[in-house]
Image: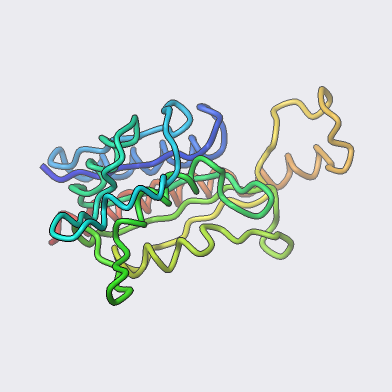
Length: 215
């Protein structure tokens, strides 16, 4: 059985990021009953960022999986044994959520050797980075996964990016102080693009699953 792990770094269970990741999961699951797709919501877990305990770097006991024990431990172990990885986050202040960044610290620091600065994960695998944001293709301040993206590329393989732009922030703009946005313009953009964004996520899921099955 092959396994794809989806990490949802967004706070809302039924909004943009969750919807994109659900479509990805549906696409991946449609390929073969020999592929298991598991989604983990980071906001449901109680965990910390890297504790600088250096347990992953002890001589003779070095590990490329974080050794600090908390609710994130089984997730990191699942990723280490996975055949594909999907990371999804809304973009806040130009970056992924704090929960996603914290997860990535714990994921990537054990990969890094302080002997030769190489990056070695337990295994290489296809990776897709999903971003949802208020910005538009020609007007956004997104750094995406920032400095973590080269780490992911070096350890796992060059990731693919899947971005949904100009997404709805809320379902009813009249209830919030969001006067800087035109609900009509947001709705028009969503009507023209959102279903296509979801379809791209579905197809990306199918592609990853097919790539895994072809190995």
